[in-house]
Length: 452
Image (cartoon, rainbow, N blue to C red; front, side, top):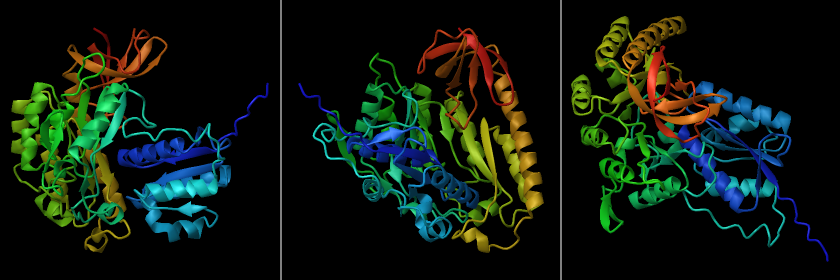
């Protein structure tokens, strides 16, 4: 009897840089390539072609992308570039003329076609009969128990320091029924935490005029509140409610209507709001949306409705025109706001950003000094808030297990950007477990405890 030898499918390596939105793009590309008969390679050596998904938000991110392209060329030689920096093809070509192809963000068909040309598949009825994967059933680059769900592309704002609209275009929202169908499949496949992402989650549905679509025998609007409520109503195979975490939320008035959903347990008591600054003068110069002087009052109101709410944010120090008075205003605001998690960036000029032309650029050494002061303040606030949790019992989602220890996250912690909960006597746990934990100790960023 003759033995059939199947042709070996070509293998694709991937380097994915940038934000979770880019990670979702990478997952979509790999899912299509896998459906087309490609295998994935975990290293350069085993890859027939390497795909580099770049970031182009800041000059430092662009340099990181160029370094990643250079490494891929040095280690493999056959490289296709995609992502946000793909819009600057001439810069990439000038430094790496041997790159096989360059495509921009969200150009899924173009990058897949480029991979096909660089490493063609071998026709085989045994390899080509791979069903096209639907959203939520494709390849994932995150652990099985948490998944990013992108609800829109692009952004309608024109913040002075940002070039995202020039890269990814204006807001384009997905239909709510399509989002919910994807989330439902993810939860059925083992996802215990859904992380909702976009450039501006609060603006979701504006371009669709908040129209209603049928879902499960009723209507659901293309609106942040409706979508959050429906996501929080999904059930895992064992009947549990998945965690739903909202990222990149601008503090528009209708955000107030999401807080009761947190108090009810439908959505995690967590808001990721990119405030960027507090000084009214600097916010106007930044052209920030939802520039509301009553933000502190609204935060206090949110905490009245949902005392457990954790608020994380990012801030830019050293924006052009930022005086010592502006920075002191920000520091006082942070002391009053008592945010749970804070990240900060030193202002960087980005090619194409309006802020580059602003007067009164802040010297680099002053940016560093202000950055250090801000991080010292926010670390102290974080340490005090975490210390208040010692002796309490909290819910924790397990991310890793090693020996007799495990590491997870509380409802106040998003993966890779916030803190962690480190557990002892936890070797019996599995990834994706959600359990009660008795908090025994804390530091500036993390908690330490034992299963309750």
